[in-house]
Amino acid sequence: MSILFSLTGLLLVYVLGRLISFNRRGIKYRPILTMLVVQVVLAFILLNTKIGISLISAISRGFERLMSIGVSGVDFVFGGLENKGISTFFLDVLLPIVFISVLIGILSYYRILPFIIKYVGLGLNKINGMGKLENYIAVSSAILGQSEVFLTTKNQIGSVSERRLYTLCTSAMSAVSIAIVGAYMTMIEPRFVVTAIVINIFSALIVAIIINPYDLENEEDLAIEHERESNLFENISESVMDGFKVAIIVAAMLIGYIGLIQLINALFLTVFTISFQTVLGYIFAPIAMLMGVPWSEAIQAGSIMATKLVTNEFVAMLDFKKIAGQVSPRTAGIVSVFLVSFANFSSIGIITGAVKALHEKQGDVVAKFGLKLLYGSTLASILSATIAGLFI
Image 1: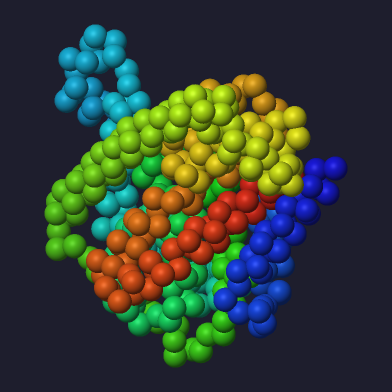
Image 2: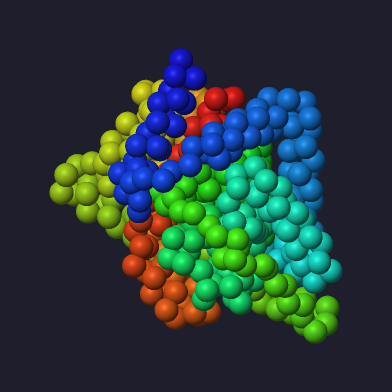
């Protein structure tokens, strides 16, 4: 039965993708099937084998240790609060992002991350036959995040076509930043976080091929140029500020969106005697069911999925954390994988702003297909969650 629902979910992604396709003809099915097979194999290894479970356990312990080290710096600055026994989401989950950001900056400075990204991207290129730039963005987005990744391609971004730009932005919105992976792991099971990060890379490219098929000439496949900061301490200082900005931005968005959701819920309860999130749950319930969620839990799952779409993944994860113990492991896994991406309305503005800062004309192009971009990245999340559901 789970296989039947998963096949239905895959068909749903294909049909919904073709409905808004830029090009009704010319779709290449071989790379889609190849990447689907790779996704299934990776999901099986990560979720159902001793090697995969051991790997995820090691990654989880590593991030848990890094988060605890990051908290030591927070304790020094906010020691008065900690001594009074005040432990908050901002202090213990968001502020350690600053330390993780510094580590990423150091690994980037010594060309360790660029080396990994480059050769994993080349490996993907052999699997799917897509451009080097597309595969580079797909891999690097999973590490650097949706806005930072475009800084590494600032010399190429002005030269790509509208079709290629859509694919690049879909990958960016379907990924997450490794700097906040530790924060995710405090709210949902680490194995689902790691699995989602890996298979989202393929899901974004698969959906991009379905919605946005195009042929690429060799001369269009631009090389990536990496620029190195003048010295290590400059890199560390910039990484500290970047991490702090992320923590503050996430905190501000949580304050605004959680308050807004509560206001809308109160209005709906007053007027319709039903909460706004429950209404969204009914709307998304059929999609959740087709992804493999039992119908008895589809409304709850659909409400969390919709919350992520209209707010962000942090708000949805905090809501999901409250009910995760009340649903089946299968539902918990599917919803968790769905939540691990930047696919939400606010990301349209973030990606548009990031591209516009580097190339104004291309930023206007991104703004033009912003809703289609959100549509595609949401389908990518549905695809990833559906495949993960096969092995939960």
